[in-house]
Length: 290
Length: 290
Image 1 (cartoon, each protein chain N blue to C red):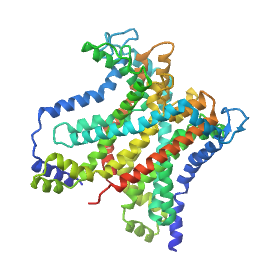
Image 2: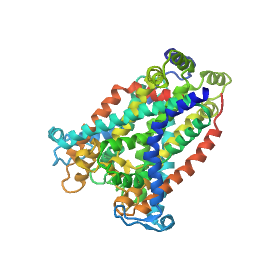
Image 3: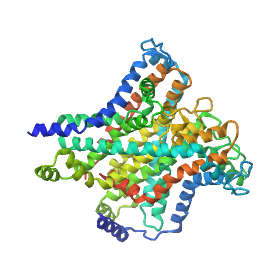
Image 4: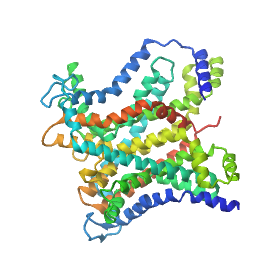
């Protein structure tokens, strides 16, 4: 893979007619970076202000302060939100990767009419907008006392993402040689053991990519959690931050505090993104070219 | 023996499909059932009214408006994202220092929750002390009321959604561009083909699979748009920037029209299906083998 890529790069260097890069490229790059970092700048800029600071939002604060962050870290709701979000994310990730991966393995290896019918079913399921299920899900969950239960929301979220995860895994499992399974079978390994000890390790790199995508999507999930987790004790980080902005609209306009909470909530995601960028970007590139 | 093994493999799918059936298919069936009733969402009383809820879809002005908006969010975002994404991919596919940084930053907003993004962007497009108006003031232009009208709000929501999710298209096209064998371009260059011709006659047709993936993903994503609207305009002014997804939740929890909300949900699913499937078929038929 590596050598192939560097080979391509060299060829591009040899044959590209305009290999000298002008300053224009850097002007465009600079502009794009500014355009894409603008919201982060606005958020951070707000979060270091006093509530009374009315200087235009484009400019730096009149007087800097860390009060908003201190207040945010002392907000029990935000810390509790972090705890809830982590539980929620871990549950969804585990469910989707194990059950989705296992099902994808079954679909890829069994072949035949049933398997292809199930795959078509999956593609149809992927098109169902989750809000179309709002009335159906909410009224059923009320009936079975599953409101304000994080595990119930996790099951629901995992179910929504399951078809996508299966679809994603199937394309990779197809490319793993069947000889591996047969060798394991001859050694007396059952199907489940073959999956966990032979197939899953083979899927490690794509699983990392998929895990990150599921984790980020779950962490950011908003629509269903708002309605299924109505209790403040059960709120996720995103719900808590949303509430901070909501009160900002109404009575006390504490935008700086809301922005500080926002920054605290975003920090883990951005940090994760910067640390795992190679898995996210290269992983996406690889999964697309499949 | 072979057959038994096949069913053993298929049995691995049971947990995943059980989850899908319980949390997607059953709620969908429940939604279809509720859509034939007049129901406020919590009382014991449900009145059978047949197809009346589906009939009121055609006379409801807010539904018409929301449907039009949903189409704008879907097709508008798809158009913007694909043009911007392809341009960005061509740009970061050049050899220059810092291209990885540009790629990293252009993809970053995808990691950020739509609700939080909407909340921050609100302070950019705000009339009073919004960052965009601050910038315009620098050039001596007075404040502009960006989100005064429904059309303005819809346009800004489309723009922000495209801006935020553009990185996905960029990565898909980047992967596509890197998969095109360099020899085609070399051969064309030897024949004296111009750069522009190479792009339109070689790169673009070979990018068709990437275009299919990008267009379908963006379309479905745009049709399901929900998060950004919540915090940016809250559907306003006067419910003129609603998407169908958001309208569904308002109908259920604000207007207490659960039956009608369920009918709108089913309509949204049908609309997505009717739009996405033929476009997918058409794009697939344009893909070339090489």
